[in-house]
Length: 591
Image 1 (tube, rainbow, N blue to C red):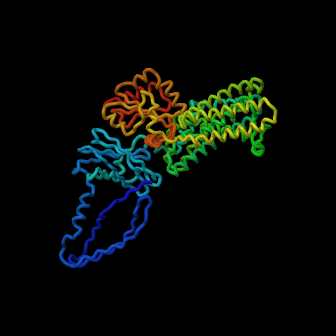
Image 2: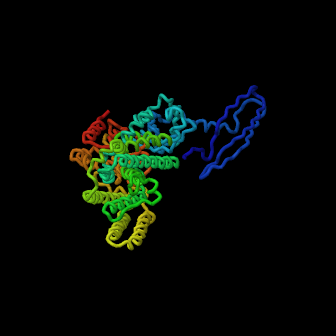
Image 3: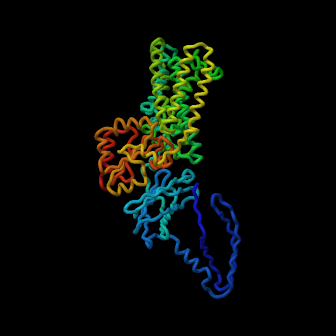
């Protein structure tokens, strides 16, 4: 929490009017206040003022009072300052102001309902520092009736000894498109979440779990309809429950004041290593190196239709599939997630549950029409070959996770983890060719290697991206600098911002098939175009706040700025050449 206070000295004027002028006046005041540095300490002061009877005359404090009175902000005209406008967008305010002389070190203070907290502003300058835009994050909106625009807001602009103040009535606060989207009804948002979850099944992000979905269907060839229904409902339940677990984690992270977003679990090295271990074990299981059995207690809990691991296995398969299938966004999903994460815990849970149901709809479809699975050929030798091929697909998924780990921890730690994954596969392969006496030492070795791989982040470091990472960008892309965008636009340039991450499969597809096209690449390389890339592979609060300013909490995210669109034209999650070129045309038009 950031708060405001006075330093060194302050005069707080209190007007007291006597009923009979010329008489003696005795005033007693009790003041409760805080003195703050790293912590705040409460104090109480008892003040006294005794004025004798007699004619009115200036006191010894008149100069001090006049000096502080003259510092009270007015409309700013005397100082050449003007507060031009106030715009609200979800949980952010944007204050625009001008100055007759260049700004030196401006600051902005916001006063509003006591429930609201306002962050330290971030400034961007144009017109030789004579125009400034201040971005301010707002917290506590859910406690104010009418939201961020439900009450008047007073803006105070200070630049050295110069100041200006303006109060904006609710109807005078401009509301951006994203804030208007936040006004959607909860029923409409749940519908968008359901549709977004369903479309997520078609996104490139689901490629790593395609083998799991295929096995879930073909494994029931020639089986009983009842067993198909129960197993697929269990997988769907695993998907929905995993979404609720993700929602709970985001609620806790938001309550702790951390940056939140869709797919941010892929920024954490321990999550990536754990997923890599599970994928390697899944691949080895498909190759026949070992048979995976749940603990007897869990297996007994879910035993059904004679299946070895019962419903618990199907439930865990659905949960695992969800964790690997959610690093990227999808159409409609971004709007739903943005609505949820800007609201309270109840909205987050409802929206994420709807997303889970949407992603689980194909499973529920098979459960409703089990003939889709039972009419497939019964498992046989062909199933062994299929399992081997799908095991290769999972091995490639493990390699992809290693590349993501390299982006988070570095190439050398990622190489060490890859080597330990390889040793795990080798030990399991060797154990499958020898007697049962080798299984126990192999199990111990696999557990030891797994623990060692999970311990790598403790020694490898990692952490948020720094400016040094900009060297990794190509000649085309410049490091992301949100504060520099208004200056580029004021100079008549067009700015293309691409927010991406190594773990975002859809981002890589956009780059390969759209941004990499000759026509789009030629536009990005034009002399009047600035291409910026924001890499969100690792946690970065600036990128998270930038996404939140558009009501977005997931990637891919692309926007085009220009004289015709100073606030940016937001592109869809799945890019198309026409969408990109149209955005360039709109942003490049002069107003």
